[in-house]
Length: 95
Figure 1 (tube, one colour):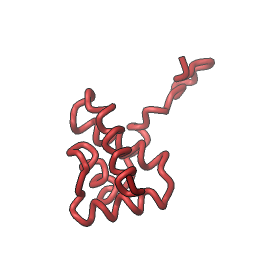
Figure 2 (cartoon, helix red, strand yellow):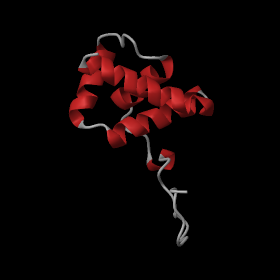
Figure 3 (cartoon, one colour):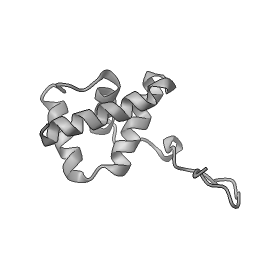
Figure 4 (cartoon, helix red, strand yellow):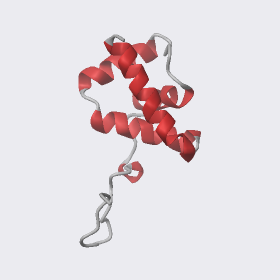
């Protein structure tokens, strides 16, 4: 598997893991994950694949890349990692 095939696989796996949220929400959360955790080189490669037709990208992953490419990163209200936003103390998403 070459680098771009690996990135397509990774994007599809992220999308597949979030699919139970429904297509629209899963696409936004997949876009958020890619924006937050992929380095610029990885994003550049997946954008190039998307721009060339998106071969191999599943529908949710394709929509996530579309969101990032055309709308930019999702707003912070979509961040699955945001917590303790109401002056809470001692809460964590780790367990």
